[in-house]
Length: 107
Length: 287
Image (tube, rainbow over the protein chains, first blue to last red):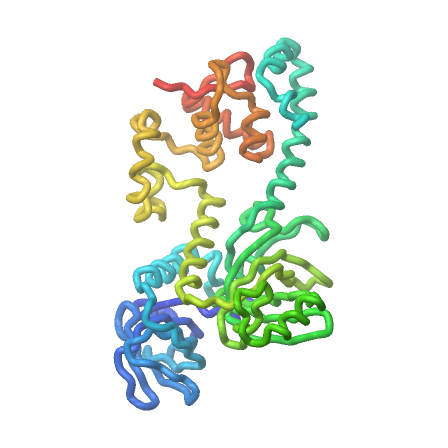
């Protein structure tokens, strides 16, 4: 079961989650065909799949795998609109790692 | 209601003389708050993550599930719908909130579903608003944790789509708050031990500081969460100068008697409370 968990992270945690599947909620800052950049407490480079539909400046939650070069290969992306409070999102990422017992099992 | 009379301080005052009698009444009374414990927790609704649902312990089959060692029955959580399978008697949703995956079953009420069809896709505030429940969308569930053939699922009372994505963020923070409340006790009013994690949150609770000022001024010695709850109860419950009996504290906090005794010992040794008419009646030592 634990293998199915996708911990919520942001740009700061990329390094500690290489080769893991994670969730990142960020704001889309640039879109270039098959790649995009989002801001999640720092910028994160994404490699998109075909059915990902991102909207510039909107929030997006992606599930993807962190590559060794700290880019993220996206499996699934979902538009979260333009009314997301990123302070609260930040608090969730912080809680996820501070109180990980209720969020994920560390390897 | 019947129990109330037994706990009144006067009757305990009278019994206090006989040492043996005190023990008897204690052991008898002990089972009653326990009953209260179960029926009370039936009425609680615990926000949790799916990992907590999967990690919930069951002391033996048919027993209530426990999260953070506290019995839970009603739970609520959010999750992204990974799979929907419609059977003759129920709809099974597979939900994933990033912490794990669990199956949620909603039994089909034939009358209600007929009405649903009649209403079409409009779903104007209908109870069974299944229109927005599609794969990959987020849903909020209220239900009960069940085990069947060693497989866990949640029997849903209500499942509805999450319209505002901030609800997900809110829920995860709420689940964290409740988890911390259950494992570490309420937020402390000022500084001290609160630093271990709750640090940033302390600011908001500054207002409470005055009320607790007397205790806080003496540095609020480090006591266990249980002891803190007992002290809080003794401070806040209306009482005469005899203070409160252990039984009363146990009943109002819905804590096992032994835990209350342990907490009391802790508070007694720290001189935060003192005994009044007998060893098991305590009052707050207000300086």
